[in-house]
Image (cartoon, rainbow, N blue to C red; front, top):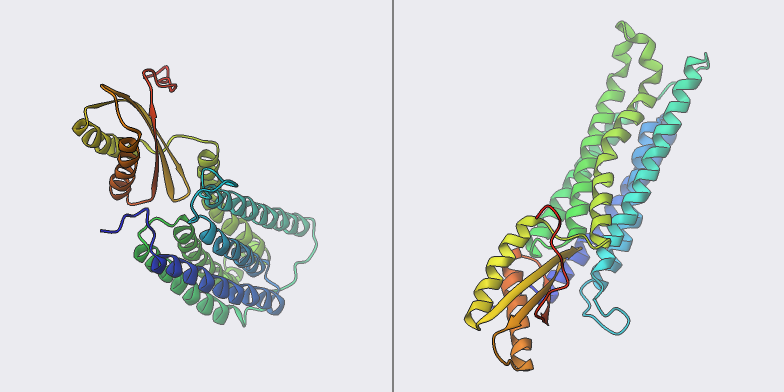
Length: 320
């Protein structure tokens, strides 16, 4: 049986192909967003284009990282290239947050100018319907494609699941924006008619406020991973059971273990106190066995280090 740590070339090619398709799809949406902005004058559609432009850059970087992250440790990167995946999410999130904050500040400036008595240029709603339908269908297709590739490649790629989430969010936001813009003339015949000229700016603020949650959450997770925070408690319970099964057979006492997730990979350090003399070759075989067992438990690659000690250096938290 093939270990999850031995990523097959077919799975690598699948991830690479999906990311390349993502680049093409986001290029199309970027051009469409900028063209729609020029034809309609809508800042909300410009924001949609800028969002897709960021996705183009991030998808291109993700394609390179996808190749690097699967390389084994070497002298240049003795702990492997897995950290690049978390760094990709971190910097991508920062760029997205910057774009969305710019959109909010620009929209607030437009509203402030309108309240001072300045006129806002009317929006040409003609192309909005076609743009909305086309982009929503493309986003939905990309989201399905990324999710399907993530499933087929073992559900371990942080890159693919992030791209699938981005496409899904983009589809929802584009649909909401398009419908709201096309419905904005209806406000003229209601008590809310005074807000009709500000519809576009208000949409930018609403869309940006909704979108910003995902990159902020992703940023916090990426910062936690790159800062060395321990993995999720659920992982600890699953790994502890697997370790006890492995070590009990060899009469090895597990003093403690640490678990850290970095991108798709989990790093495991096991501190053991052997009851008797133990050969180095046995430690090597045990490490590989733990790698495979824990990888199958967590359904993601695991890298294990074994440290023989009487007293592990990790101290419990005061609350424990």
